[in-house]
Length: 120
Image 1 (cartoon, rainbow, N blue to C red):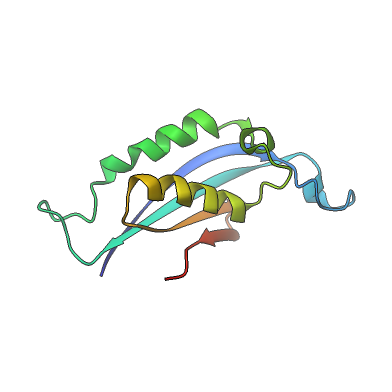
Image 2 (image 1 turned 180 degrees about the vertical axis):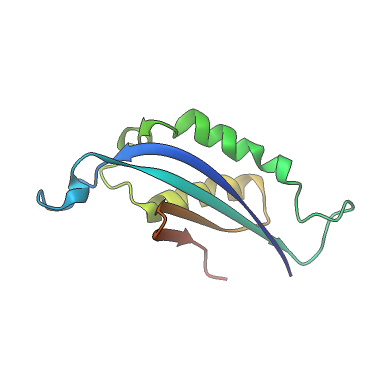
């Protein structure tokens, strides 16, 4: 099995409104997010790739246009924009375009990461 991944970065704010008022994440705050998309295949294409990394540039454009320096609650129309929900959102977006996508990871900080990977 061949596996590749690529990272994308963006900065954005959010609030987790379902948390108690005394929880720091219920207040407006921001992160420097890292989104990593993972693709895998049992075979390689004629050039020797799972997929050309340049084909994934649409994800960078999507992130830059819709998420970078935005308030995520407004972008997704949701009071609970967690890293887990972002990972699922980006997974669904990517899977529609590239069938080789197997997972998406979202880091909010260098020490915290959420992943969406469907059960096989």
